[in-house]
Image (cartoon, rainbow, N blue to C red; front, side, top):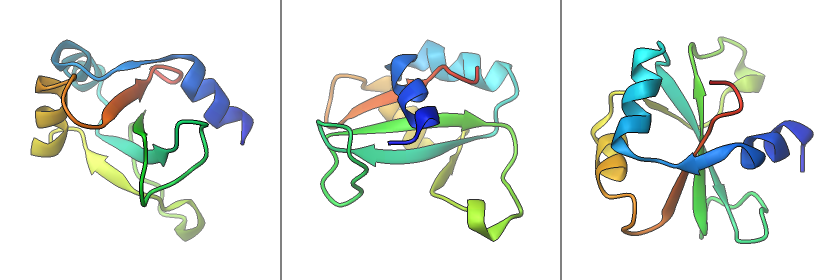
Length: 96
């Protein structure tokens, strides 16, 4: 696992409505969505939880294109409003 991904896990919290609002207030526009198994292996097919990494801008570099969701999306709002339902959603505070 990359060191930066390990750092993202080390400083993460469950996504909640106040935390999502804090990210919006700080100017974040997107989150990178990463799916992981319970032993922290990257897995988008049957993830145990999702780790969201906040970012300000998307990269134009095709090599750095990943899965992103706009910070104002209905999906993120639904997840933040129901933090204890379904798959566990964590937000990395490493870059906040």
